[in-house]
Image (cartoon, rainbow, N blue to C red; front, side):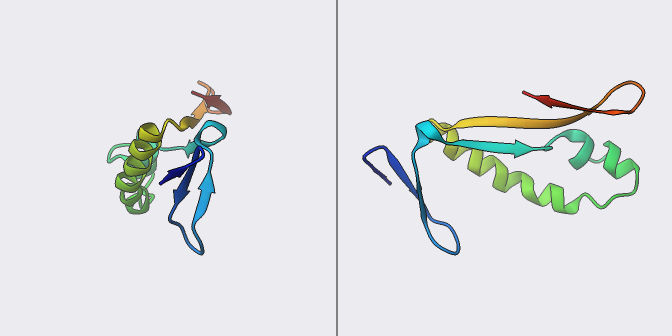
Amino acid sequence: MRSSGQIAIEAKPEALSINPTQSAVIVVDMQNDFGSEGGMFALAGIDISGIRNAIASTARVLAAARHAGISIIYLKMGFRPDLSRSATIL
C-alpha cells in the first residue's frame, strides 16, 4: 500500500512504513556453499535444512522488493585460495 511514496509492510510486532527510495533489502550469505546439497556446509555435515527453508521466503521478499523498486544488496562470504576470509559486496 502506497501513500506519499511510503510502503506499508505488515510485520510483527507491528506494521512499518518505509520509503522505497531510501531503503534496501540486504541478503546475507545466500549462496550454494551454505545451502545446497554438495556445498561446503553439507559436505562438512552441517544441517542445511534451516537454510533450505529460508529460500522460498527470501525469493518472495526479493520479488516484492523488485516490484516496489527497492534496492537489493547481496553480501557474500568468500575465501582466498589459502582459505583466509575475505568479504565481497555484489
